[in-house]
Length: 458
Image (tube, rainbow, N blue to C red):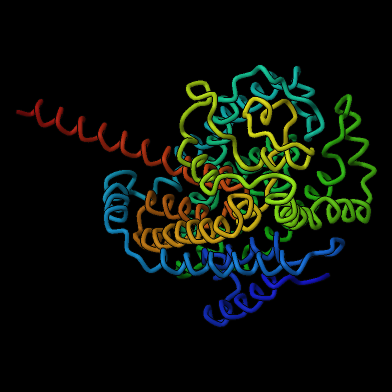
């Protein structure tokens, strides 16, 4: 394994954060900066098979340093209006945290999850032609290209919301030393419904959130012990390991029926699965960063310096209303990897098109060269620091809604690092907007009810 300059810097900063946290490893998971460094190290920190150019190595490190500079600026600003808005909203909606340990609330969460699972199965049945195909798709089957994409978008947002509540429920169960088997069953449903999608991260995410919520509890609450969770952690690690290796072997295979999947999993060879996982991940992102450096400005022209920024601004507008809206960079990179250079949305978005990722450095370089690297590293560094700032200010406020908003800001601070930038940005900002609008709606409904009661008494 070869370590990049970014990887070396991440290792050094890991040690600094560990010392800062007084060697409490579990406390690191509660720090946005640690998650940022973890993402950078995972995607840009090392390589094995490729020949990484020195210029690309330096470019990655330069982008990383600029990102941390922007992060520092955003982290030390105080967005008073945004802070006041979210704290005020948190004080007026869902203020009783004991509701999350009540049987009624857990049952309601289970019911909503069941409805989501039914919707998920219905949607994928429409996309893949039959229920059986929906259950064995694993990235290997073709989707119907004439089905409205709004349903897939809705499914993604619902999943994000349900996942966030896994964290919230677990945190308050820890706070009041409670346990619910119905809650565990709900988490298992979220795992199982994600498996046919083929995404290893999505499949293990509900279980990972249980552990992350525990780490937050150990850090922020008193009287919470890590020892009583050891058996549970052993099961989570073992089951997650099995899911990751199994999906590494069977995804991208077009199975004919469910029995074929069963036979493939029953004959699973751990060594081959491990090699498949390593080959699947490998140097893929770094290779695409280097491809951006070599292709844009040489074989294909640079994009406009503000191409990605325009996609971010226009993202909320449906393509039906603006057909010429620019597509995300991932599809542009897919066109370049296929040997083309078109920016026509109708040509770039087609059935089976893949949205690739090249991180801030690769996408920044494509947006006008060195200027794009500087601009997007500083811009997203500032955005990340601002999200981290809001996370810390809301985390200690003490209400359930402030905890939920803090978690959303926490995810927003790092989930764009892999790229493409539009996809990562949208995955963070849209769930926050939906929860914010829903909370504002509930607040106004409560105001209306209070006014009606006062009017009735008068």
